Length: 419
Image 1: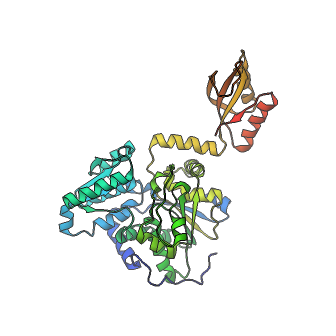
Image 2: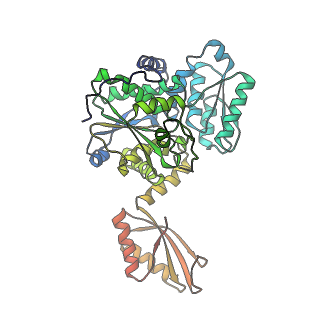
Image 3: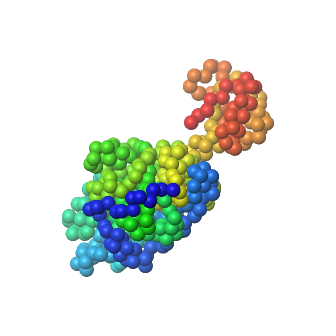
């Protein structure tokens, strides 16, 4: 079990007080759902501890973002509400602001990049916001939103770097403690840091009441991990992000307030690769029957890879479920490939009749299933008398995949796994 000798909140902690987080919960209760807490038997066996999923993917708007957005908007003055609000986002923040504004009768303008996924665009519009498509990258979209605010007087609603947003996200901690009173560890996805700052701040201040320190672990996508270098430097550091399937947590620089809270209250920050996130998404679909976006699944990815270890009851926050079906199809394929349950192989073959039938027969003898076949004479490195066969094969896992490959090798073929 986690140590119970540090049951005191950090002195002079930045950000909202515990009283403000509790007030935020009262404020958002009319709009925000108390999302389910699902126990994971699979991860219980893997980690040797009780593991629960806090299913914010089932929250209104499909993510936790409505908590912080509504808490901030509900405290605007009548004069500020009359000016309207503006935000820039490619996804969850946009929907959170749009719904919060609709519930409060505030005009909302949301700037989204030109390439935004159609489901996110439609959802934001359906919540009543005026959507302006501008820019090919988020920085251009943010700049356009700032210019709109300057021109019209609209109030900018930041996605994470604001005390009222942090307090709203911190309401999750209060729910977690009520649903799992014995919780010892909470695993949280990190982008800009609003969610983990709120959760970590709440638990740090709750420590004297509950008589123990709850350990907080943050998880970032390794291609967009600004917090490890920032913690090492002692201040927020701007990084150059690389493409990642966890697009919901791609932030190049931590928020100033978020960083100040996280530096004092978060125990560990780890990173995970895209393939592991894809595996986690497939696990959640198959074992928990939960649709989770890649950014919301990074905490599970960390459990699968051993990026962190836990002692005692553990809650993993599934922060969102807004995933484009087309992206889901690709991510599932990648997750199955990473788990070696979907095998893509290339085989050079003599250019003569019967070779395709023979390879298919060998795969069938190994009790695997061919789902796609590509036969070409134009593969790189082929001899003039050869063709290349690309097979997509369903297997039962690593051992079965190796059995299929061994079957082909024993028959004299040279299969090459295509990752």
